[in-house]
Length: 98
Image (tube, rainbow, N blue to C red; front, side):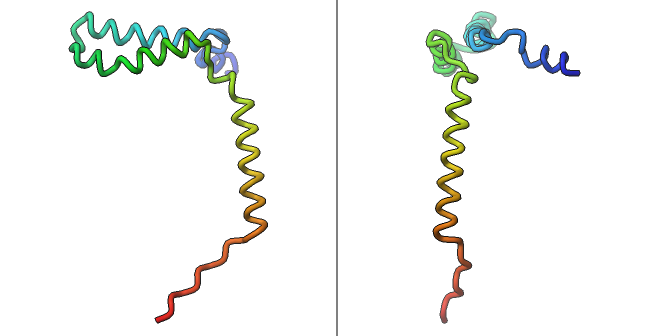
């Protein structure tokens, strides 16, 4: 079962998944236009996605590169929320006076 998850998630492509995704994203937009499934307006509308994917690929960006940073930021945010809750616990609102 673990092997199936490894194959489906692309674990064997570690390090190159971003490049494959960016290339597929760009190729999909161009091929749809070339086969007539999209008009020129549709191609121009999807241009930011195509260029964004290629830009991420060119910058060698990856999701896994920043997971440690995100986890550290989440821990800092949780510590801040806990500190604020300890300072001033939430009180039920008083009913309005008539």
